[in-house]
Amino acid sequence: MSDLKKTPLNEAHRRLGARMVDFGGWEMPVQYSSILEEHRAVRTAVGVFDVSHMGEIEIRGPQAPALTNYVTVNDAAKLTPGRAQYSALLYEHGGFVDDILVHKVADDHFFLCVNASNQEKDYEHIRAANRWDAKVEFASERYVQLAIQGPKALATLQKLTP
Image 1 (tube, rainbow, N blue to C red):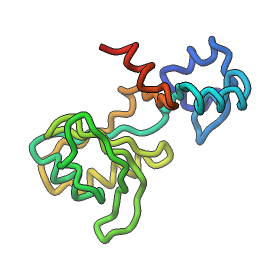
Image 2: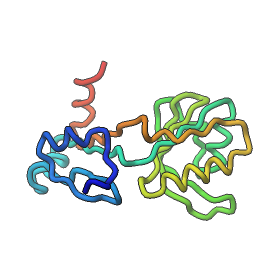
Image 3: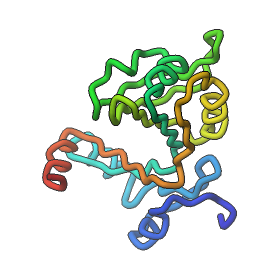
């Protein structure tokens, strides 16, 4: 598994005893204890998943809303900063490129989470569609992403953040 890509949390997963597998070219933790125990924890309490293998693309500048709206199906400009929405990345004539999450960081800053296997393709598509002067940046190397899920996810996060 030495030729696989690794998330920044790879060594921590290993120290904590995760069972690591090849997941689309990434060395990822598939489980720590038993699948049933982990499933039950997420359904009844909270679970944390390393999804750092996902792609991150940032769109910034005064024209960021125009570009983001051009390449996705939703009106991302209407989002409140700090909110996100599930969307689709489309080709100019409406064909499907990828399903993504669009996060509005600020009125002039959008953060797109794209599928790991499509991140380079998605980035090139957005860059090529940029008829505006928006700054499009492939930012995957700078981020760790955690998915915190379950009925106690919000309460858990509130204990950890101001």
